[in-house]
Length: 313
Image (cartoon, rainbow, N blue to C red; front, side, top):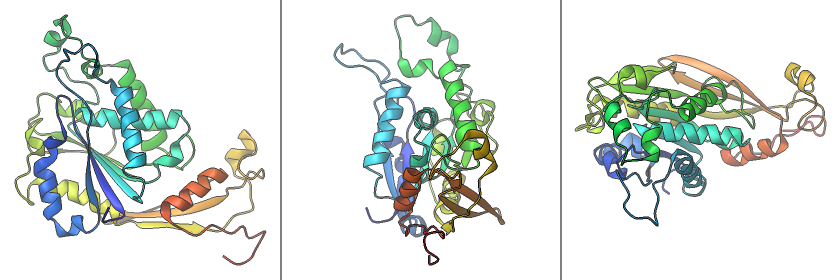
């Protein structure tokens, strides 16, 4: 670990971490990026078939849990994390987020500052769909979730949209994280309509489903786009700790007392980001004591002082 930030790369179906080699080479050569973050590759098993009865091909839930363990162990020391995926890897990230939220672990997502999806089949892939369905001799647990209108994928996406993309605060069941979603201009495996799906911030990059990753120079648009997203996430100012406010939030009057029992937030933070020349501030209120401690530890900040107990911060 040479930096306090990391970018984690997640590959797709029938692939491996080697699919990122051309991009990681450029990232390592870029002084501005390499001075700010380490590049890590998350690997999982995705063979076309399995002939060994003592082994199984993992499904999305198992891979998502493996990603959770990777981020907890391998990325534990890092203060900021950016996730970048290709193809099926984007669905793995969404399944991971949905499972974290459903388990009440939203606060643990606070270190993830941005997620970039490249050619992700958010609405499934119809490529050779008839052949895939008719191949009775071939049953692949990952391929099933790549079919259009997969119930599990739709449910995970719904959870991510509500608890991450459009979340307005950090809590046990939510954590706002910006998404940047890109389709391949000539991709016929994952069409732009599927890649963009219902996400609010979308775009397109040169290449088909495979060549979108084959950046040959630092001027290639895939590289410049990824670098821009990385710097946006890593250059933002750490959240400002604000003082306790002795008031009860309207939401808590409806749902009862939380946190310290008064219904007031235990901590408030303000995040400030600049994108496209526009500055945006977001105020986040945290009501849970354990969540407050986790936020402070993850950002290496001094504890907030309750002004009712002491007038000095």
